[in-house]
Each structure stands twice: as structure tokens, then as C-alpha cells.
Amino acid sequence: MSEQMVDVVGLVTVVVEPLIEHKESLEIIPSETSEGNILIELNVHEEDVGKVIGRQGRVIKAIRTLARAAASRMDAHVEVELID
Image 1 (cartoon, rainbow, N blue to C red):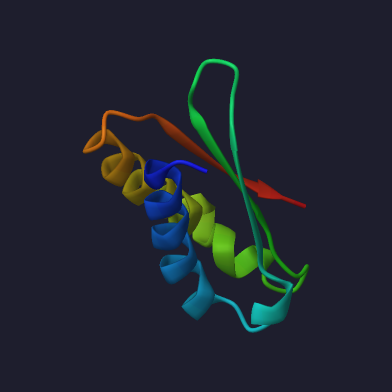
Image 2 (tube, rainbow, N blue to C red):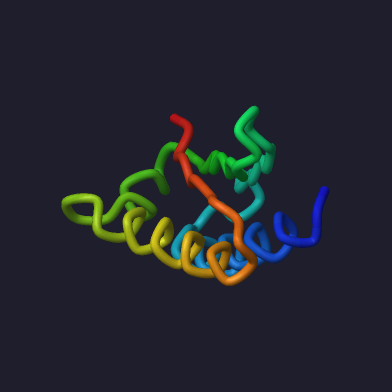
């Protein structure tokens, strides 16, 4: 795993953990796409999905924005997806 991926995964972890109640079920799966982009998949407990999405998707959108901003400083592209 590249240093860029570790930094972005750490950022996403720090942002998501305080939002959820079932921290033991938090799973963050980083991978690299065929285009060289970073893909971060979030898997949370079903009771915490609404908290991570937020009203009208504002929380997940903010998480994506933060991750993209952090990755852009390292000339990388990142996508954050929530897995049901």
C-alpha cells in the first residue's frame, strides 16, 4: 500500500470513527483502480449507515471532499464509496 493511500485511509478513519456507535464493525478497504486512482470502500454496521450518509448525503459528501482534497495535495485521485 502506498504512502498516499495510507494517509487518505487514516484521514477517513479519523473522520468516520466518531460518527458511528459500532466501531468494531468499521471496515475500510483501500484499493487501487486500473486507472491508478485510489478507491476507499467503507463498510459500517447497518445502524450506522444513516449517520455516515447524513441528511441528504451531506456527511458522506463532506468525507469525499476531504479525502479528495488530501489526495490532491499528493497528485492522486480518490473515490470514497459506502458499501451496504
